[in-house]
Length: 121
Image (cartoon, rainbow, N blue to C red; front, top):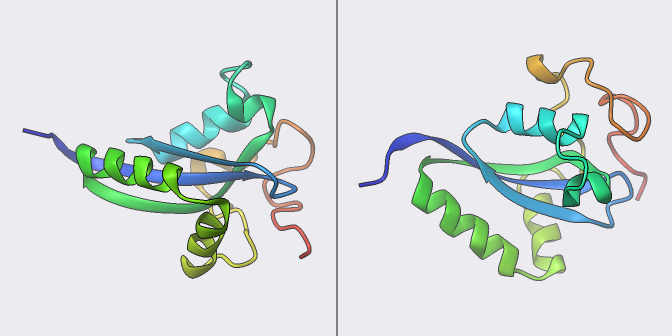
């Protein structure tokens, strides 16, 4: 029987919006901190500078979250972009701006989370 908990499926983008990353976690704020501080230096997100939260969904069941993650990963780029826009973030703003644990955490590749969170379209 799956454990009841809070799980997030999330999409990150780099500043230029050319790379997307999809993940699942039970601690979204902590996981974003890891992405931003380069805790895993050789990871995909560190290599491609992917650290801006552009979309997320919450689940109470880990299996449902993993299933959704796999579904999103199978989608085309266009479908993922439409999801971000339909999810209320057409400007691809950093949705984690102002989160307490992340406040003041610099982006590893210049600026802070409040600078350049969106890219002019």
